[in-house]
Image (cartoon, rainbow, N blue to C red; front, side, top):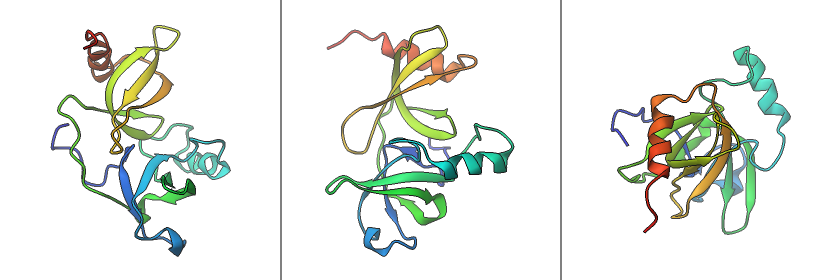
Length: 153
């Protein structure tokens, strides 16, 4: 990915550490997900209202998961999360979906010309995926569409 990405940008699928009020989650390498990944978070909807819309450009809350115990930290604030450095593949494309950034690899058909399944890289060496609906397929989405049409090796 380009080196011009802001240092504070957190990518879904990254590893992070947490330093907030729940001390038993300190000093653990946690896996970063959107706050609503495993269900509905009322606090997310409350925060949306702060922006005056349902889809802010950058969320300031996430879910952090300890993959060894599956213990989840819901609605973790960005200020309490520190990314663990990770080198993303050269073909990764930063894509914002519903206020969360993904280090995307490619897209697959999602049911309509604007719907996609976005496959994204993770620091855990597996591909994640999420479904989304784009208002307009922007250049980054078209690039991901092209990468999805690569022949399988």
